[in-house]
Amino acid sequence: MKIKCLIILLVLLYALPVASQDEMPPPDSTDEMKAQAESSLVYILNIDGAIGTVTADRVIEAVEMVEDEMADLLLITMDTPGGFNESMWSITKAMMNSSVPVAVYISPSGAKAASAGVYITYAAHIAAMAPGTNIGAAHVVSMGGEMDSVMMEKVMNDAVASLKAMAERHGRNAEWAEDAARKSVSITSKEALELHVIDLIADDVDDLLEKIDGFEVNTILGKKVVHTANPEKIPIKKSFIQSLLDIVSSPNIVFILFSLGSMGLVLELYNPGAILPGVVGGICIILALYGMRTLPINYAGVLLILFSIILFILEIKIVSHGLLTIGGVISIIIGGLMLVDTADPELKVSRSIIYTVAIVVGAFVILAFTLAYKARVARPTTGAEGLIGVTGVVKTKIDKTGYVYLAGELWEAFADEIIEEGEEVIAVEVNNLKMKVRRKI
Image (cartoon, rainbow, N blue to C red; front, side):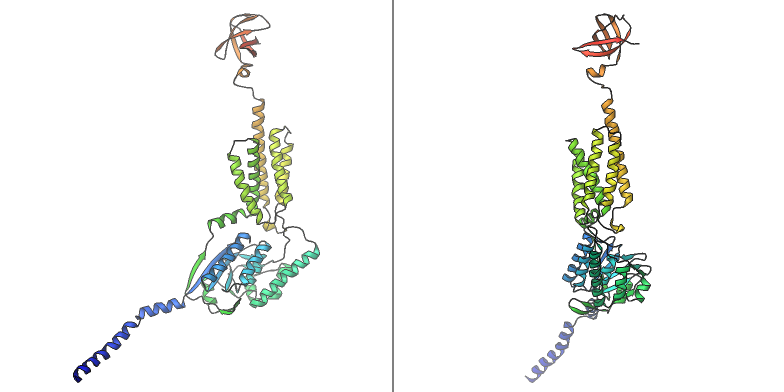
């Protein structure tokens, strides 16, 4: 009995370490788990071009996404000449209230962060630039109407106060921020680093992520250490709808769509049943109206463009010897220049686009007028009217009446004179299947 108990005890003592070893993960599995624990999740959003409504929507959606996914960082690569105030404030508000650190990286070399780009950079928890980039010229420009000096000063003071608040929160140069807003100063990436406008200079995204690993930043939830080691980089791409809306939000595209769309609709009204001009015109107008919703539109410019289209159509209906066309070209040019109500030349309709559209539309109207005029004065080629002026040959002597061969048919004819057989005659009038002719001179 004692021997049996001893054997059972030895078996149990032997099985215990074996079971413990089975429960332990293999070395490779442990290393893999450790690597996963040390990896980071980084979402990358690219901003290239003017800041508008679509850009603001993309940034806001990106901030919500990284918070839902509990990512380690939202990285915004940026190259912008500026943009509209409303969209800019929406972006900075979303970034300042993000619980996930947001880094702005002005890149690639040759890129810039002007005007609204300065505010977005200052709103970021981490600001970086690539070599050969620049930042500045954050002077406030009027949007949606002219402002008097008092109102401009109020808007400027508000913008400067916002920049200073963002600078204080992230430990950046508030004095330079005020100069950028009031004096439109600009600096290079090297100067920005020396003046503490940005946190670092990085050659590329990988270099940036390596350098900011371990940075401590102030988020809406308090201080947080940034982890970007072994990053899983996920690009945030534009959807098809966002790409389409981004295109039609351009002031140049809005002008082209509205001009061509208006002409298409008017042509359809003057020629019911043509279908194609109406369909294309309707689509262009709807897209242009969406674009106008995102821009500070001057409706005097809109009315001038509509007036130009009316003048072009009247040119086809009324002989004005080109005066209506000239008036239409002048009207569409002035309307294009006035269409977007902003002092920032980067956000206005391009003058080359305005002149090109005016010339193309004017040339189209001249062509249409020429064809309409030719059709109006052309001699009829069918019916009784089409026989007037056609030459024929007398088959039987015409003495009051007779017969002529004309246009491949034998006609009963009469004339005011006697015409002998075989002579050539010209048709003058057709009445009740009888043809009046005269001798061909």
